View (cartoon, rainbow, N blue to C red):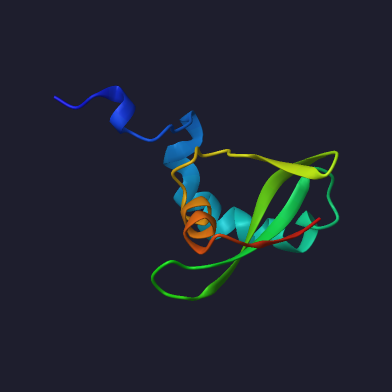
Length: 91
């Protein structure tokens, strides 16, 4: 039996992430840079090396940026950014 703490934290929206990534993100991308509390993260894929532009909820607090992880911390863009050690953010 696996321990609950072995699983990454996921939100209730987790099951909708594929639909959002495929359809909603492409609709949000042109507006995310101008919309309040949104931004575009540009990151490189861990295995493909491809460059991705992902709309995200982002909030500025002083010199720091806080990201609202709608689908939890186990999503591809988070894994890509952590693996690369960097990304760029447009707000």
